[in-house]
Length: 78
Length: 224
Image 1 (cartoon, rainbow over the protein chains, first blue to last red):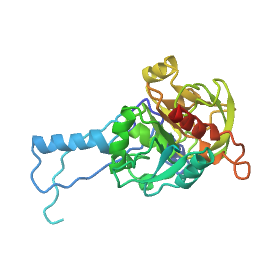
Image 2: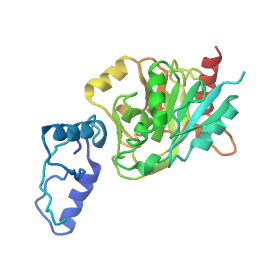
Image 3: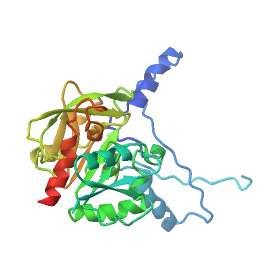
Image 4: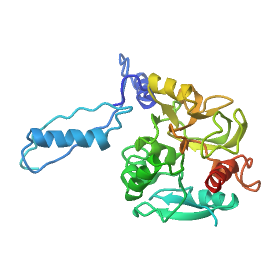
């Protein structure tokens, strides 16, 4: 996500479009990115740290963006 | 001996040929560098051209920054190699942390393409020595993500150290903080800007020939 102090003109454009479509009451929209990384092994602390490193150096530009890493279980059937 | 100026081609670069041509018109020898080749082929300076390297995927310049050629350029730039980043090249330099800050979506969300007036604020860098401080020039500007942002402390530092090299005149075209169009590193060998001096080197095709000074500056500096 863009840091709060960074202007997000895309989010603003979305926010301005909402009332036109009948969606009232949204005072702010911020637009971000989401990456889904699938890993073969269970996610231990070391693997999580590798992903954070990936985010810090490549997936996010920490000059203008913040990031969060979250673990989700994937259904075995997929 | 002619001065060799490398121009990097990434997948998606557009203005590499124009940059090569500008080097030639300024009296240098353009050398094509390939993103996948770490070797800089003994060039004396490097230009990162405009375009959409790697399709602007992830963020503008974010993938180009990790290309093999950039590994060598980042090392050598820190050791003093003159490097000019134009438009997408400026974005690559910011993603590489050779220059501070970042380029974000134009505040009005439109792609902009026009002749842009600029003021040269710093005529002491490797790429601006042929201008005078305070000189006004007009070169094309064409981008969708040209809004220069950095935190207040960084902006204050850039101002205090004279590292704002170009400022937009006649209205801020993209929401850049403090009207900043281009900046330099502490040493003055790395310069990045959003406008395109390489499109303003010949009367036939450019609005002016105001851009030629970038290329003659670097050549003069290298010969001296």
